[in-house]
Length: 366
Image (cartoon, rainbow, N blue to C red; front, side, top):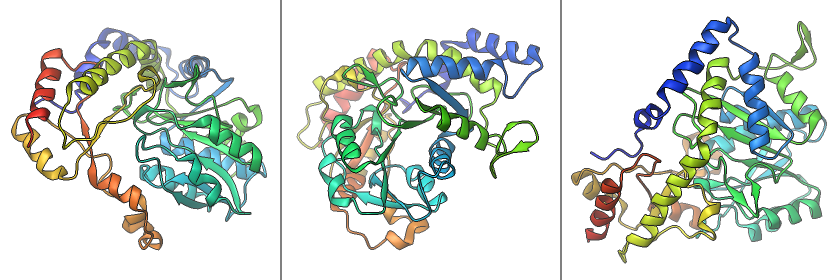
């Protein structure tokens, strides 16, 4: 079976570097809020072209703590609305409702899967305070148009960059466009830790300090608590692992782009809709997502032929039991996307032989 993603093989490339980094942390005797985290925060913010980076426990916390920090700073209040595309992963919505804010679900662009800027203004009300564009699958949302709308209506912009580490638009990195950006370093991400980890990047020093305090029990000075905080810290081991992986991120992105280019040029099956992108170099291809009406049949066909695929995601947030209050919403574009999308294997360690076999097998599907 050709795996969807062989994480062991991905990390084996850097095995000695990772072991050395782990040993460095063990030998230091310092395992939280130490030199490794400080160094990673500095290196990652520089990579993303921003001034500040706050390491947190995971990607959901990165989103949630940013919204919470804006509340603490008086920029948001309970009941304020956050506009977000309806076809995102549920974490984007969980962060909103966790903060007693209201998600306003809008239809995405069916071609790119990202937030459709033309749908944003239609959804703005007097309660709207935030636009949350999710850079799905590795391609940046139409940030120029989104920022024009945000400035016109004086809205905050929180980029969900969980799938877009290193993506660029007009030479600006994902995360450097909005007021803040949230990243996940879940192991399967393009920049993946060896466990859970996340981060917020921003150019706003006050926001940065507030997020750091909130994630550390609400304190920036030991035993002096400004906020009713939580425990959401990136540990030293994960920071050290990510420092190693960050050095190789650009080369892994190039490898993914090479795979995607082969798929785009090689897959020729009238039953399959290929992803539509502008400049291939601006897409980091966390996922290579095709569309097909009879998805289950293709999934079974590929599995029978030794190819593992995944569905990102089978059920949209507004149809989940957790959000039963939204279950009656009709979002035909979103629902069609969730019924048709299928992710093919893509990783920096996919061999040319396996890639050619996948393309030939997909083309043979009838």
